[in-house]
Length: 45
Image 1 (cartoon, rainbow, N blue to C red):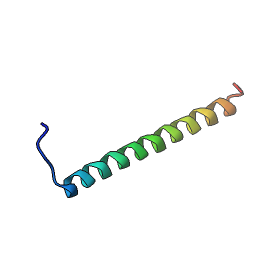
Image 2 (image 1 turned 90 degrees about the vertical axis):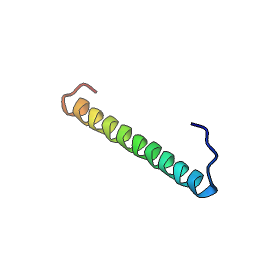
Image 3 (image 1 turned 90 degrees about the horizontal axis):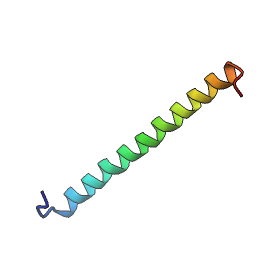
């Protein structure tokens, strides 16, 4: 599992991790926005 990797492989892995994290944040933000919109629309807030 912990085989030595080249710098290129490490950068590629980091790039994937960063992209996944950003997509996760974007997904969470859009979900929160949707929940807020529904709550405001139904008069809960």
